[in-house]
View 1 (cartoon, rainbow, N blue to C red):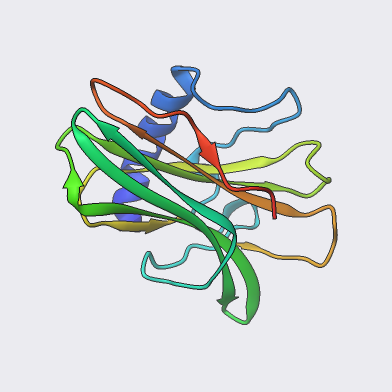
View 2: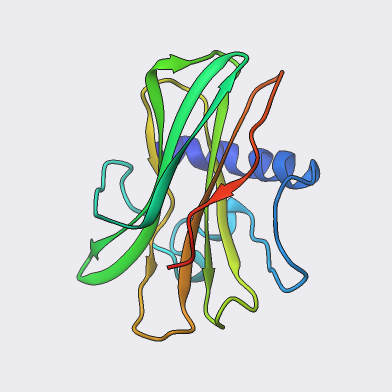
Length: 167
């Protein structure tokens, strides 16, 4: 899945960012998906099948035209001996229209949410698929925090961007 992710990352990021859909503040450093894969910016690629402990909540998004449902969550766990956090997005196997696309990204701050780096967005356009963002090391420092964000779009409709609370 990560090889497909690389092919679509640049176009997906340009589409979302170019459309002005990304939420952020003037202190936000927005990264393209290609800036956080393959070990870049301190991130570690992980398999889409990796599961960890859910933290900071989760959510689901749905659209009616075409019918589509995605769920998203933030997880933490051990990756290569290091405690890390990552995002997960799953598409419904039974309700996912042919023109629907789910988008997943993770924001990481190292300065108490004054600014953050964005890892993603990563798109998924098939039913019954699970994807993850690359993982980033957790820290006992109060200045490091994570959140996972998602959006669901189609030709006819789109949801608002929704994020987990910072963790």
